Every structure is written in C-alpha cells, then in structure tokens.
Length: 272
Ligand code: FAD
Image (cartoon, rainbow, N blue to C red; front, side, top):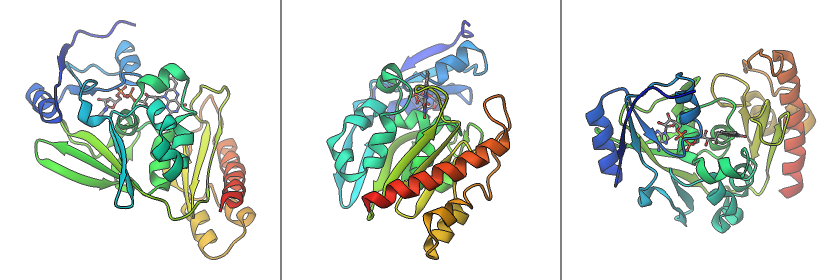
C-alpha cells in the first residue's frame, strides 16, 4: 500500500508541465486529482518515476461558452462541472453526470481531464463525451491537436495521448436537442457503473459495455429510421463486448443495456 519512490515536480504552466514531462522520459505521469493514479501507485500497478503535478495550473480550470460551444479546462473538477450555471443551462447532461460521480470527496478532487485520460471503461464521463460529440484538445512537445471523442479511446486504460502530451481542454458543441438522460446501474450510490447510458438527442453512449466507451450504433440507426424507443432499445447490446466478471455476467450487462437505454430514451423523450 506504499507507492514505489518517485520524483515529484510541480508545473507552473501548461508549457512547463510538458517540458517537465518530456524531460523526465516515458515513465513520467501527470498528476491531476490523483483519485485514480494514487490508488494504482499504492497497489504498484502504476510505477511512474516522475509525477508532474498539474494541480496549480490556473489556465486549466475554467468553463466558458462562446460561438455555440462550451469549453471546459482539463483540471476542472467534477464538483465545479456539477455546479456550473453555464453547463446547467447549455449541457445539463454533463452537469448531472458529474454530480453523480463517486462521493463529495471524489468530486472535489477528481477532474474531467483525469477521468478522460485514465480511460476506465467503467467511468461515466468518457461515454458522455461520445454522446455529446465532444472534441478533446491536447498539447505536447509536437504542438497542439484536436481529437474527436470517438477517436480518443484506444482500449482499456489506453488513449491516443503520447508521452508528455497533456489534455488541456474539452469542447462540446451546444446540443441542438433538449432531449437528454443519464441512467446508471450500480450496487451503491458511490460505485462505478455496472452499466451506464448517456443519451443526447439521437446519440446513445454506453458505459462499461466494452474495453472502451461505446456508442449504441444499432440503436442510433433504428431511432434515425423512426423506430420507437422500445424497438430501438432492443438493439442496445449489439456490437458491444462487455466484461464477464464478479460484478455481473456478460448476459446481465447486455440485459441492463437494453433496459437502461429504454429508460433513457423514454426520459429524454419527456424533455424534447
Ligand atoms: P488522476 O488520478 O490524477 O490521473 C488519472 C490518469 O490520467 C493518470 O494516468 C494521469 O497521468 C492522467 N492525467 C490526468 N490529467 C491529465 C491531463 N490533463 N492530461 C493527460 N493525462 C492526464 N469515476 C466515474 O466516472 N464514476 C464514478 O462513479 C466514480 N467513482 C469513484 C469512486 C471513488 C471512491 C474513486 C476514488 C474514484 C471514482 N471515480 C469515478 C474516478 C474519479 O472520477 C477520478 O477522479 C478520475 O477517474 C480521475 O481523475 P483525476 O483528476 O483524479 O486523475
């Protein structure tokens, strides 16, 4: 339960963070809220030789809206997102999901950038980013690039981010549709989802139905063809590959996906 020794560096700016991480080599890691990284380090499942603390970089904490899109700094905490008036008005799906992550301690420390970069398929925000068609902005030694959420997640705890590449901002187009819903099935309120569903308009994101967050694309196609919520939800598990583990067998997760997508589509329909 004690992490292996590491070097701690505190970054004063985005450029400084990239410089420190690039100088430390491939075994450096950024430290955001620490709520995923520190437990892994204590279990020695992560053994970085350098931690670059990005927690005091003010330019990474912000929420603003302009030109039809909402921009959120990567170090913005779940609690700040849950309490944001801008998000409550423009992207209520995101505000509601953030307010249900973990418990108050997790929400005050955990960050949107940390959650996305960690790429846990059981995390809520990655699937929400898919449903919202978000763009992720990353800056590294090779410059700045914009990555569509659909292209960001490669596999279990794996993203397209290169070593020393820092996620700086998340950009969300203001949804055209008022129809949204988030449904999450977990054993206790603070737990990760056994299965979760995020609906925004005709987009349906799935939590924990594969090694990456997924879109329920067959359901989306059925909706686009005019199928009822009930008929579209019946396809929710198609094209998924959920885990079969101690929390739930695969068939149960597939069943949950169908039930939760139906509930989400019904609730979204009441808001449209
Ligand atoms: P850290 O732990 O600091 O970092 C995580 C990883 O991302 C590290 O590899 C780090 O190097 C990298 N990283 C961090 N920021 C950046 C960046 N800007 N650019 C590039 N790489 C970066 N999550 C849910 O979705 N739903 C839940 O219900 C939920 N429940 C939880 C309950 C508990 C008890 C705990 C401890 C956590 C829970 N979480 C849950 C996870 C929580 O949301 C974490 O805060 C989040 O996964 C990681 O965010 P962080 O800021 O703590 O990142």
